[in-house]
Length: 556
Image (cartoon, rainbow, N blue to C red; front, side):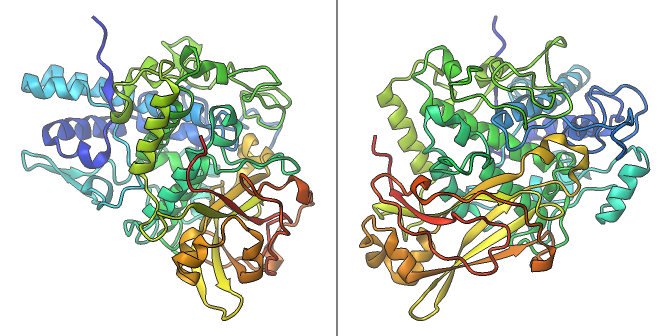
C-alpha cells in the first residue's frame, strides 16, 4: 500500500488542529534539543544554509571556515542564490527538516498513548507553510516566546527562536559579536506588524506571469545578462528576499537587523523553514499553472542543453560546483541525498508528490496532465487568491518600475531600495514600495554569493500612481509609458540593515554596462521611450531603470 502524501497546510490552519499541532511542536522541540553533530538536529540542518559553514552530514568536531583560501578548513557553502537552481535546491532542504520531525512524531507515537485518529492525522501532517501574502493576523506559533499545550503544560516555543548549542571556533564567535548576535536568534523590531501583504500580492501576480519557457526569469532574481532582455516580470526569489528583510529588519527596515536578514545565519531561525515552505508551495503553484501540459511532469523544461531554458555556466559555483562548471537539471543539489545514496537533482525533485508531500491547492491535480484550459483556469484562481488592491484592481494595465541590475554586494549585507513617486507639477509624493536585496554580511565564505554580482528589481507602482493622479487619469494613460516621464519624478531611498540611509561615499562603484534603449522591455505593445531620469540618490543602479506598462491580465 502506497504511503499517503503529507499535506503541508498554511500555519493559520495548521494550529487549528490543536492535538496534531501539539504533537508537531513536541517533535520539533526534540529535533532542536539534539546535539549539532546529529544529522537530524535542527542546528546541523539549519547550518546547511550558511554558518557554521561545515560539512553536512556532520563529520565529528568541526571548525567553521577561516579566511585563508589555502586552509583545509575553508568552506564555501552549499546553497544556490541568484541561480536557476535556487527553487529546486531549497526544495529538499525543507524536506530534510520535515523528515526529521516526522521521525520524531513516530517515536512519540510509539512511546505514548495517543488516540488513533489523532495519530493518523499527525502521520499525514507535513511541515506548515507561512503564506505571507495573507492579510489575516499572524498566529501565536510565530510570534509568542512560549507554547501552551492542550494539557496546560507550557514550554519555550521552538518556532519562536533557537539557541545555538555549539560555540564552534573563534571565527563564528567573532562574526556573531561583530554583528551583535548572541547565541539566540532574534527578529527585527516590530516585525509582527505585518503590513506588506498587498505589496507581496502584487509581486506574486507578476511572478506567476512568467511562462513555462521563462524558467531563467521565474526561478531567481539574477540580472546577469543586463545587455539583453532582462525578463518582463520578477522571479520567485524577489518576494523571497523581501520577506527575509521584513522579518529580519522590521516593517520599515529600521531596527537592529535579526538573523533572517543575514543569509549567513538565516537558516538557524525556525521561521526560515515556514517561509521557504511557502516559497516551495509557490514553485508548485507555478508548475501546475505554467508547465502542466508539458510531458513528463514538466521535466522537459529542466534541460541541460545549452540552447534550452535551464542552462547556465561558470559563475554559479559553490563548494561542490567547480568554477566554470555548467549547471542544469542534472546538477547535484548537495548535500541532499535520495535514500542515503544519490544526490538529489532538479529532475528528481521537480514534482513535489514524488517527494511524498503536497499542498492543498494542488493535492487533486496531476502535474503533466493538465490541458491549456485547465491551466488557464488554475492561473485565474491564483490571481483571485492574490488580488490587486481594490483601488487598482480594475485598471486595464499595470505600471512597473524595472531596474535591470542592482549591485547585490554593494554594502555589508542586505539592504532595501525604498521607492517614492512624486508629481512634477506640485511635488506631491507617494511611497511606491520597496525592492529588497537579501545578502550575506560577509560573503567571503560563500563562493556562489561572491560570483553573482547583480540582481534585477521590478516593482508594481500602480497603487502609488492612483494615489497621486486618481484612478481615471492612470487608466487614461492607455499604454503611453512616455507620459510618465513627463509627469512623475522617482526618488530612491537606499537603507542598510538597521534603517540607516546609505551615504554616497560608502558606495562601491563597479563598472556596469549600459543598457541600449532598443533592448529595454516596455511591455506588450509599447515603443521604448526615454527612461525617466533618476535622482542623484541613484547610487547602485546603472542606466536603464525605467517604467514598464503591461496589460493587467495575460493576453493568452
